[in-house]
Length: 330
Image (tube, rainbow, N blue to C red; front, side, top):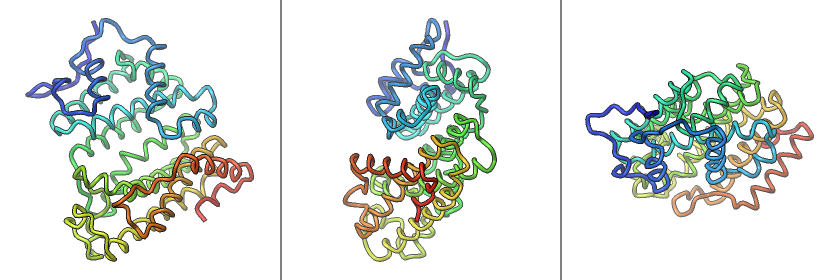
């Protein structure tokens, strides 16, 4: 028998009793740390499981299928499944003690995967990706460190704290894409980090209402206070001139990161330029919508509809074909 070990708690995690989202609860029942597998999940079953998770939950799944080289698609689904499980454990397990214990278990499974042992479907599939593309452990372990931070930290007071959070919770995803493209050079990693940090900053602005309603504030509170906007104002969803000035400062910070990344996109392979262009284009469009709504992110999430995203995909493809992908940030 293969036992999925790794949870070390005084009070055991019970998959049925941990407060989770329904989909995560079902997966914990089937593949959680208290389950015993008679044998590892087969590689074809593991691949299908990861692909299904990607199909159901990965933003822009259809676009990625069109852009990604066929031989890399399954590898991206495997990486996404690893990220999806960890992110769900970090934000949908509402008891921090249980959430951290489950993330310890998830980290142990990653260690065992690099030691050549895997039974959980995500790690059976990920093991193939790691071995084929020679992916080091650091970006995957960094993601888990970021997931732990989601369980432990609900406020960020300075810009430096938020940059450090992006270093663990967002930037590793871009670096993993570079490993898929076998181009994880220092200059390419810097370009990827700029884009991931800038896009994450835009998400913090876009999802401010959703985050505060769950008890989190990802934007720097010290900077908000300099504009006269206090922590309590976030939770009362106060929309005033102080908030507008503060949010504009955050959007400008995001634009700086995005422009720095856009200038380096030509360093990457064409398919990675397209993916980076979509990330940039969507972030820029969200910024435009927030400004158009006079910075009201409280009453409605400023997200472009799907048909506009397809128009954006077409524009990104055309700019990339003409070698002008950096024009997205102008």
